[in-house]
Image (cartoon, rainbow, N blue to C red; front, side):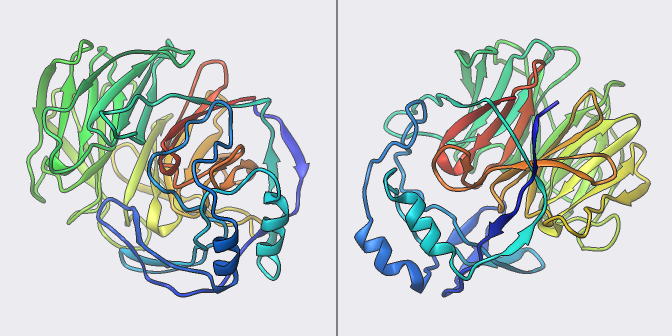
Length: 389
């Protein structure tokens, strides 16, 4: 179990500024926005190629730290307010953040999670490009499977050593987002932009594929997540014309589906993560900022409600449950890890927007190792983060 550091009071900054932010079909925020309060500070504090951790690689692409944010949402689009702060020096950062946070924020009493170590695993370069991790899965032996935005499947041992890798059959149209190791040892990937599921043998050769583009039973439009239950059934969540979860046999035969586009009970706006536990399917409903629970036959059960005193979820992108029936959620917009009980009671939270230690930038996925370590796909920072309790 992860240690919790009391009940802390933290600021959730909200700085006003110009807004021109959209969400693309992959759920990624695009566009620019500026905060007038930070423009002068940005000019005076622009420092490039600053490494903030001895073990964390410096991304080759320019990544702006997301320090204050606000969101208005309608349908599948959103507007956010982020100050454009480039790489910050270690010295003086606290003072700068203090200046930025003046006048920002509501307060929260959510407890904070405590970790003894924040470390990173290297994502190998693809030519001159430093890819970003997107999908994660750890098996019972702590072998970790990673999808990156170079169209590769990367396989690591439990200490973060890359042991092998292979490429998707095709990736010119876009990169996959969901990965799962099946009970028979094969690896299933939600091949998002090719509207199918690709099943690999352990050596990286293709076993078979199922699904075609479309809205009918067994078809997909942008499948983004995949999971398997102990009985062998496969669940695939898609974000496109049909916002739904489909259930299949191990061989890819269609069984049933549930969900549609919307914000009512049982409806989704980007069902981006799925977890099965004790006959129930837990789905992170990203753009509706919530977790929904269904029977594994598809019947809606409930929405997990957080306590009123807690900060709401902000773009929950993936979900895991541990052996203690605690829920782990990675929040893309809030850039944090949230751990809660099945009833929504917050066990603790960790992380904030940024590039340094204890920070994430648009994280997409997480997985839990057998010894309690947590791996996070810190996508915007082009790194895998390892958190040790």
